[in-house]
Length: 40
Image (tube, helix red, strand yellow):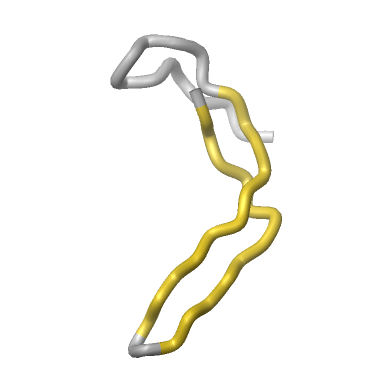
């Protein structure tokens, strides 16, 4: 688990969650599942 600092926009605590990430590259869509992200 990565330790995040506080949110640079609102100052609240940032917690790690798992999300899907959609990425388009050279006309192809790639979907990455279960990517750890920091969310405030």
